[in-house]
View 1 (cartoon, rainbow, N blue to C red):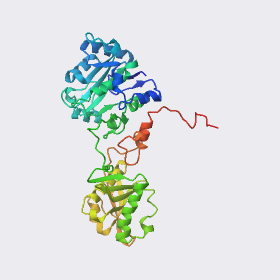
View 2 (tube, helix red, strand yellow):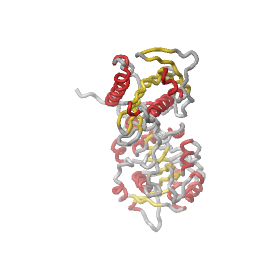
View 3 (cartoon, rainbow, N blue to C red):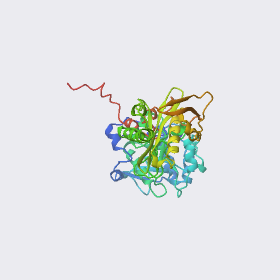
View 4 (cartoon, rainbow, N blue to C red):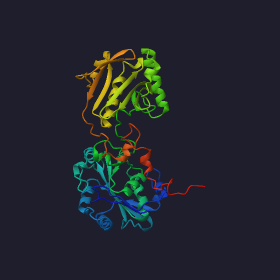
Length: 420
């Protein structure tokens, strides 16, 4: 397998150009599962000197027109010599006169540089020193600047990445960009995922390889993690989750408010989105959202009696508002019990001019409306299509269909004959 990870100028954007690998090759080259000990027997990774680096860049330029000049690379290496690692076949390596045949170049970004990368304001063709972390400074993120690894040197890329696990680099996530479908598929095979980085359009276009110590902040509607204490919110995604919602609302509305079953479970539960609030791992509250052409509706907020002095109700409502905003809604509508108008007003909702009063299930209600600002990461038609097909409320992280893109196109139901 031969691949190159160039950029338009040694990485203004990582324009991966790659021969389409076989499924076996994809699995074999996963950065997260490679047998590095086996690979290391065949390659040597080292820091190139000025002459060696200039020759490598010249060699790469034959395949990658427009590659940045050696002067830019030397300037980056002056800030952090670890930024470029050369790769050579072990059977041809001479320590007295090292001669690399491939290389991996990375930008070690400080926090300011990582913010610039996500905002799209980092000039990767001519990175400024104030965006770069020094050799003995732990970077906030590592941007894969360029990779040139022809032939059998491809496996050396994983060896370079493995070297970046010293205390100064451990836990710093990797980032990259791909300008071609083949490049994106290769990054996926190496363990990168696209679209999981929170931020604007530039951030969402990044491919991301998380390494554990630094994680993107979860949105308020996806904060529940099994085994973690405190309050957590999750979207109901399976029948067990729906059973939790039914139990919570039965305990609150049917048991406490004497609401008839057919009025509480009104035929809208299979068409709505449910949020479940957990307290120390135990289901403690829930909320339902339904979506219409120009507005979202928040309803059926229920919190168990023993948790009504906690922040769970506020956390659930804020999570519901945020989820609606990410889906592109700016108008959020609801029917508030008259006695709870002040509660809903804390979120910015108001009884608007012309609001109507209504009665159902033995309580009096009034219409309320919340007008919000556009969400900076609202999902629209211009969003990454892989984001749009992710599970509800998990748009911020790659899903199973993202990972499936690393497989080759086989069209099994069309191109393969059926067994008789």
